[in-house]
Amino acid sequence: MEQLWLLVISGIVLSASVVGGARLLDSAAVRTSANDVADLFAIARDQAIATGKRTAVRIDRTEGRLVIHADVDTLMRLELARLRAVSIESTRDSMAYSASGLGYGASNLRVIVRRGASADTITVSRLGRVKR
Image (cartoon, rainbow, N blue to C red; front, side, top):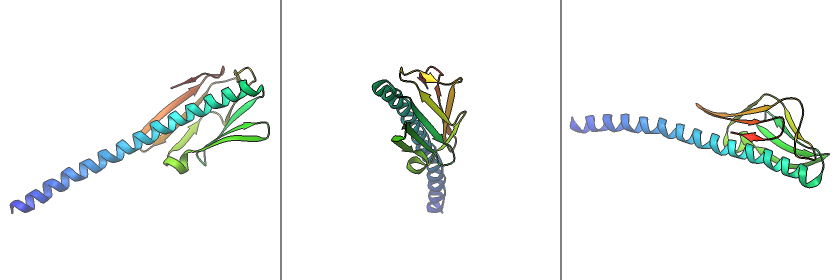
């Protein structure tokens, strides 16, 4: 009888730790992905300044992908849905940087990275600054 109670209690403790572990993995995936998104925008801005060409970050929400384009060249691709099973939401489908590194367009951009109950927001101002 005592062994049965021991098994029941260990099962309850184990199930609680599995749920907590899943939340921890979700949080880590979202945090890492949000850092990658912020880095991607910084790379696009630096590329625009270095080359003197307009550079754009295109956001594909359905595929969970961000891509840096300069003219007809694809400079970098970030496949977040495939890499970390996160979803992406955004207020716009792209962000462009002019040759001076300033944002090109009329409004701010907000990207939300989400997995499970964890979410993180990256805001890119119309001047091109990234804020988390």
